[in-house]
Image (cartoon, rainbow, N blue to C red; front, side, top):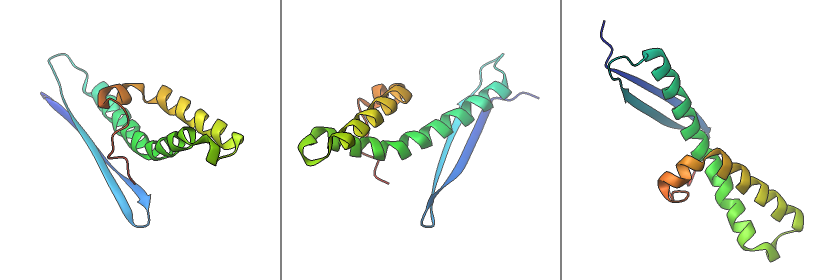
Length: 106
């Protein structure tokens, strides 16, 4: 059997009867391990979902940090923590998009 690509799709429940389907197809070269490619596909889809989900909180935190006089010191500290964690966890996405994409809306 010659496996030439791996596809992985997952449907995420967003609540309120809404779903999001994220998927990826990975083309395999000679010698690539299909099981490792599948593992990479699962990890990519899960991280892409988290990026979109946590991106909403990140954008809100940026608003708080940019307007600190409208919030308590504790809220600003929490917002800075959210920003630090998000930027550490999703550095490659932020670099690829040149920031957090505007498609993070839900």
